[in-house]
Length: 225
Figure 1 (cartoon, rainbow, N blue to C red):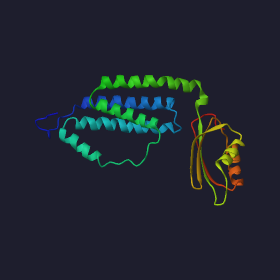
Figure 2: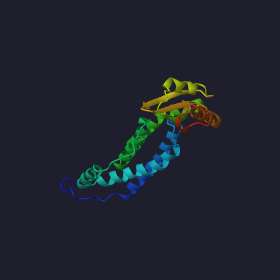
Figure 3: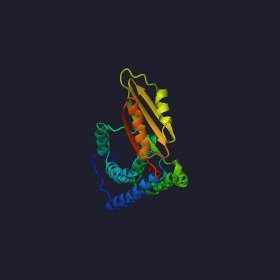
Figure 4: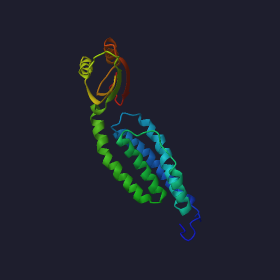
C-alpha cells in the first residue's frame, strides 16, 4: 500500500490470488463437513456448504482488493455502513460458524496462508471430539416439535393442563422453551424418538380440548419413524 499516494492501486499477483482462492475453497468444504458431523443444531446441514463456498472466496477477494489501496479500504467502510441484515441468527453456535468462515477469508485475503491454515487446523482439532461423541452416541440426535396453541376466549385452560395433555402421549420429551402471551402459548419440545402416529394423537388431544393449534417438526435424527 502506497501511503504517499493513497489513491494508487497496486497490481495483484494472479497466481497468489488463485492460490488463496483454492485454499479457501478447500477449507470451505472441510468446514462444512466438520460442522455437519459436530453441530448440535437441528438444521439442514446441506445449507452450509454452498454458503461457505460463496462467503470465504468473497471475503478473500474483498480483502485482496482493498489491501492495495487506502481509498478502496475507506470506500468499503462506507459501503458496508449502509448494509442491513434482516434475518436474525438465533443460535450463538451458528454465528460462530459464520465468524470462523469470515476469519478464514480475512486471513487468506491478507496472504497469511500458513497462519490461517494453522488456526483453522486448531479449530477443527477442537471440534473433532464433539464429532466422535455424536457418532458413538446416536441418542444425542433429537427432534424438535414446535407447538403453537390458540386458546379461545372463555377457555380456562392452564399451562398445567397443557402439560397433562403432553404427558398422556406416547413419547418421552423435555420442554426447551415455553412462551405465553394473551391467548397464545408456544412450546418447543425436544424428543429423541417420535412417529407420525404420536403426532396424530397429540393433534387429536388438542382438538378435543377445543384449542386451535399449529404443529411443526424438525428432525436431526435417524430414529424418526
